[in-house]
Image (cartoon, rainbow, N blue to C red):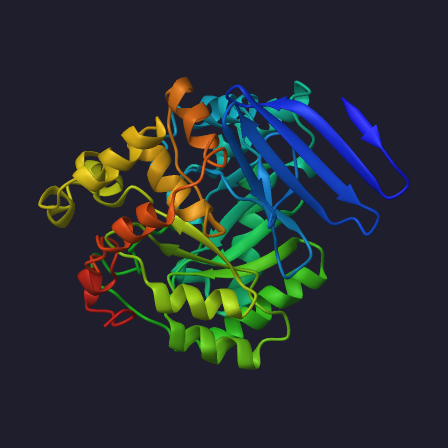
Length: 371
């Protein structure tokens, strides 16, 4: 049902899990949305929409980023194309990948098959990749981006992040790709003296060339961000960090959001994300899915523990990028803006913070990003 007046357009429609969405667009193009069920009414004033299913965050670059996306980390080459295709069918529009994940060709196959089949248009998608550590030298940044674009079979990226604030020795693409922790000499780490600002300036040039719409950073601490933005011409649009109830980083999040930089959380389920890697730290840590605090909040709202963990982030305007090969979980992970956690819920979750980081370069080679 569509209601129009001289000043506003109000659109009422069924939305996701037996909800109704009311979107209000004022004459100045500001939009906000109401979601309601019987006996329940919520308003999300900070979102606009990129598609009919996923609210978005407005980036400082002017573009819209979906607040829920599909993470491509640990998606196998054998299943990636079908997983991406099925995620697009389910309603996902943000896909978070990286050169280091080693699956960009297959991710691109899924994306392009969905476009060819008419499920989605390229401009409706938000595709993310990350510059790996071996390509920080300015003369190598565009080479790495071109490799990503070729593998994805795309003309541009919506967002390109510096994966880690670490510069490894350059490894030619034809020698080993992705290089991972290989630096040309067995298992030894070799570093290059490349200031982060030099890498950033190379990314800015690629924005000006139209190969990237937005640029950002990942796994940066507050001091590095503080320094980078003082030398940058284009401000980082997004910071991607490990973020879950065991590692909440409230000061970093407050600082970054106050700078107008959006945040994407990875490993929203905490140790669950690292179990298949046989991480001892993860294996020794109680899973958040079984934590009594999370389970009780989930029971109260009639949601799964995973949905509570994702809503904990999205309710604070932090994007999330879970993955699943299960159709039901795909839909559940996307449906995490249809309920609100109470202040009591948020306070209870805040007490779970123990500063426990599962992805720390100190474990690689005593690299002191987070010490």
